[in-house]
Length: 366
Image 1 (cartoon, rainbow, N blue to C red):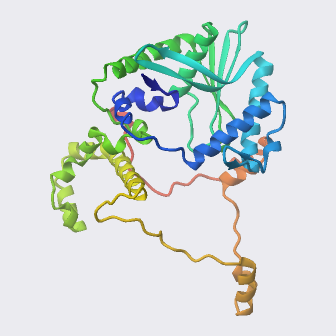
Image 2: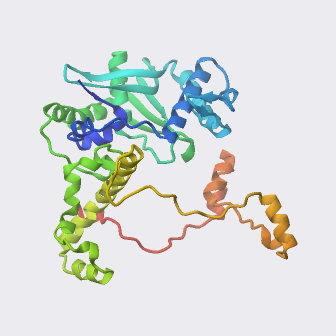
């Protein structure tokens, strides 16, 4: 049976073929950032269920992660949001598994961090804690899937649906509101066709920048290789000088340039995936001809800063030259300011562009 994860929905909705490609990829253990996120989730869940403080876990080891003050801050933000939802709506479940679709071939289901609802208000709220730095939109495929699953679990069609993301790295929680009709329309036009395509299993890969970003099958995807067509047509590219490469580029038509720019982000991700895969293979003991692991560039670091400061001063460097200080950035200051003073940043800063950069012109359409 194929098991679809809501957290990977952006990938398999845009590229149903990726599901079968990924089935051939060996399991990759979660990285440290994901492990930290899991530990923070566990602290938040336990603190809520036991009516305790997340800060009680600072210094303790959860899921092989030592909980820091910042980890506890993130968990506390989540717990506070959960408690507010419980007061507002009444019925609330944490770490609630919901099934969206299931037959003999496919199961789509996952665990929502928070599901809260109120029958009389006909309101459903899905809330999710995100601990990473990458901005997560509340209007996401993952959250919509959780909402559909939660309604099936509660056996209620809620008129008002709220999708909330708690992401302390990006300030206050944010919420996207959607009606039952809008959610149902999305399911009919996006979710159901993708599930049916996955069941059939005869679609070709359809790369997109967002869909390919975290796809485990990037390194073996046949569609990704199409990004190298121009390179393959220029067999001596590897020995060309920069000026010789320019002579090839100037022969490209506007259509070819647009096509290459379209493919560039996908090709870059493909190359990154190949590099990561090569590292994994070499670390496992395999030989990749012409390649090896070697230490990264070494940078000098003080063995003991206090001792270095004293000896450098004794050697003739003035004290005011030894230590530099500068004002923290506006974004760092915004994180430290209390909520009621956030607008101070707007008064004290201005936005300056460093120049022009190449970007899509969406006014011309796709």
